[in-house]
Image (cartoon, rainbow, N blue to C red; front, top):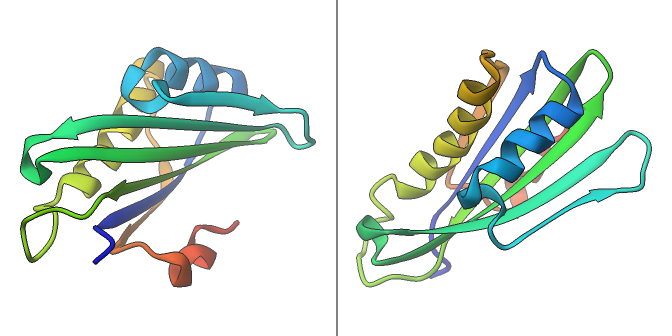
Length: 131
């Protein structure tokens, strides 16, 4: 068993730098690692982690932010490790993904558009998070 995962992709009507700053200020999205790559379009990668009682362990979140001029694309993937419970993580990975999204949108006072939420995320569903 490899744990449970969840994916979310949204478009935000704000600038890239604003989204990057919001994620840097939310410790559970960036407490492990963050970087802004020297690419065009600009891309930032954040890795965070948080303990969830529902899983009796930590859940990891990876967030990718892509500058697209008039809007910013955000992709969030959470993942639980193996755990003692059978039958899933009781929604903790999905909850964490949306907590990260809420930290961005609440802080910036915006609503996301084109929200795509993917339960039981795995590599075979990666293309669903593509542009």
